[in-house]
Length: 334
Image (cartoon, rainbow, N blue to C red; front, side, top):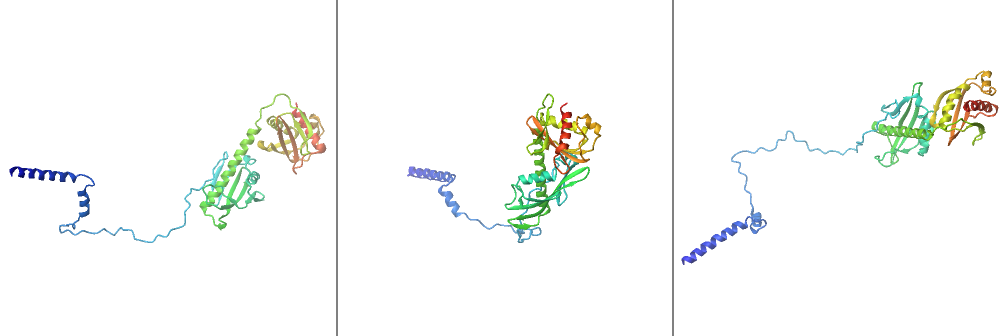
């Protein structure tokens, strides 16, 4: 009987240990049962009164109406990418002001050439151009956004300016009034692109005309060029002919007023010399009126040809051309 009592006591102890250990295991039957029977008693405040949330600084519950989409893009600013220039936006127009000696490169005629190359239709009126509807050229713009621009060249004795303004704007064929930010965004963007492309074109022309200098004496001949004009042909490349003409033309009374080396163009002002001076050049004095003339030099590899025209853009012909080109050839081939 005593042995039986001891066995029961041991069995009871083992059962108790087993039950306690099983409660430490995750997902056992006890934990499942406990989760199902968990209860919470009311909080005992020990007689204290619990104050609710303070509503003094609580934001009022209002219905917020959704506004129109806002353009968060920073506006493009006009960039002074011409040497010694100043660029600005005055609230309506984007402009770049540059020294007048750069006018031969940056002018409304060059702008018209760029617009034609881009297939942008326009109407020209003196120094002003108004484009037809065209895309903005921005990848981050909404679809079907089109703009009409006004582009203008302004001139003074000391400075020139290219000015771009937004005339009209539309989206999905609905004409809208552009905001000041949109005017700056689109006018500045077009101005920067135009001036940047003119810079690139000018540098390209400079590189293409920078041919190696030839050696030896220059030979010349009076010919008819491909346009049927009388011209002076020279056995020298562009650079050598350009530099030599710049030295010899003033000796014949042709003062150089402007020049654009990239186009091989010079604007000349002629003042007649005495007949005795022309005799020193080996020819008779041509019957030329004092006034404005121009010179166009074209290169053909290591050869070149020059044509001189009057103020009406008509190439010299007949005895005038023969006398001028003979005297010029005698000076160039020395």
